[in-house]
Image (cartoon, rainbow, N blue to C red; front, side, top):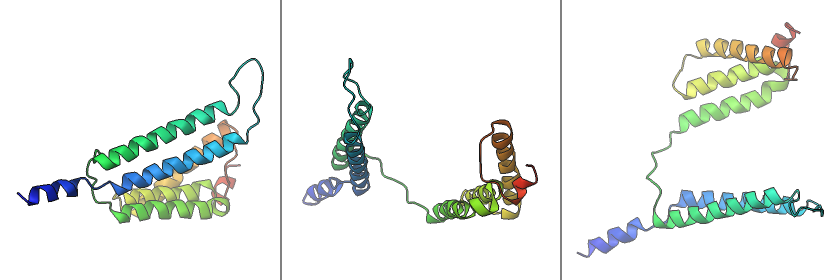
Length: 163
C-alpha cells in the first residue's frame, strides 16, 4: 500500500521536453511582440494596422505555450519512442554539405548530396545509386526553375552546361 502513492507521485513528474517546447514558444512570441512593437501604427479609418496580425500570432503562441505547460504537468503527452541519432546525423550532415557546397558546386550537385544523405538516413545506404539519382532530379528541378520560371538558383559547373 505504501508503494501506490510513490507510483502516482512518479507519474506526476512534468514532461521536460514539453516544457522546453513551451519555453521556445514563449521566446518566439517575445521576438514577435518586440518586432511588432517597432512597427509604426497607421492611424486611419481602421483600427487594424501592420502590427495587428503579428500581435495576434504572438498571443496565439503564448496561449499554445500555456496549454503545453499545463499538458506537461498533467502528463497528457504520450510516451515518446527513443530517438535514433544516426538518421538525424545523416540529414543534418546533408544539410550542412548543401549549405557549404551550394555556391561552389551549384544547386544540382549540392542538393543531390542532400538527397543522398537523407536517403541514407532513411535506410537507403547505397549512396552510389542515390547520389546520381538525386543530382539528376535536382538538375531537372533547376532546369524548371531557371528555364521555365526564370528564377535564380545557384549555378555550378553542371548547370552551366545548360545555360
